[in-house]
Length: 174
Image 1 (tube, rainbow, N blue to C red):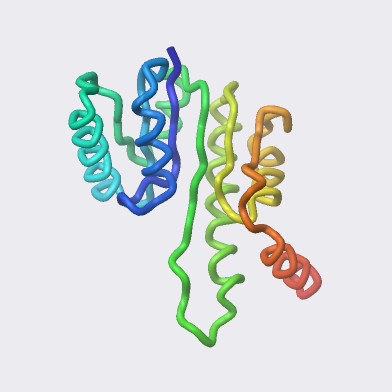
Image 2: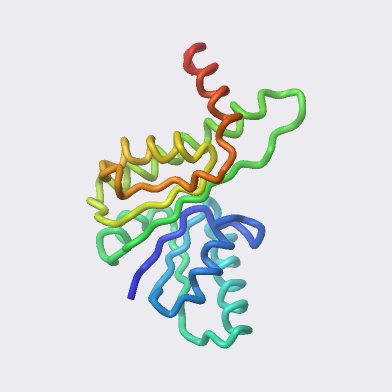
């Protein structure tokens, strides 16, 4: 049986919520720890996930919301086999540099979480479901200290448009 950590569970429209919902139905998954920016929303999502599984006849406790400040302890005490990183950002108002405003906070969060994983000596596998996934996967592997073979980006995500932003920003000094 496996334990899973899903980072990026905000509400029922989030990719993290959908991943957790699908994985919760798998009998090989023992626990799914949920982490989001807003603990109250994540707790609400956890209840919604429990209700969705109960409606399908799954009666075991699967979902466990955690706070950001409890991440280190959870990584050290629980055997987390897989982590799914799914972060998004609300689209800013028109007339702004939308891609830069959307990407920088996510990049900062990826670095922050990956550093915590490194500090905890996380031995599991990580799946990145965050645009631009190729860059975010590389950054995760770089900062987490995980072997690149244990970090997988879902390449079906549209990264081409973000590459141009990163190149432009690197040339301008991000």
